[in-house]
Image (cartoon, rainbow, N blue to C red; front, side):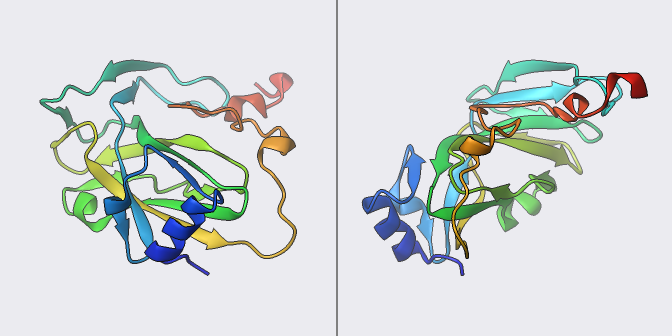
Length: 178
């Protein structure tokens, strides 16, 4: 089940959900409107699952930054979110999609016990100017069935993420396979 805006607010008050920085005016009927952080990585060259991704990193100026088609950008949410009680789903929203920006299509699930600033995969269909702190999507909280299993305790490879993180799939590929 998806929490309503008032249920999200009650869970924040009860300490079951953390959103930092939190702004109650960003609650919508069934979600929290999250914002884009101020840093962007541009992935350089060809991508290879067996090797770390080369990138350049830059701050997004207050005057904005133009995203170009054909480039893969990794961004970060302004908010750090988490819950030991609820799972999270992070998605772009209609207003970003109407600008031709695809955001966070492949990894929307935030596990229970995972408190992070989310790494965002961002692509643009046409040149589009973005700004730090702009609304970029919706975060939904879901009730999980069964006994909770903390993501942090599983020592998952992204458990310590606190900002933009490149793919670490190369850690899983045996060195002899290359």
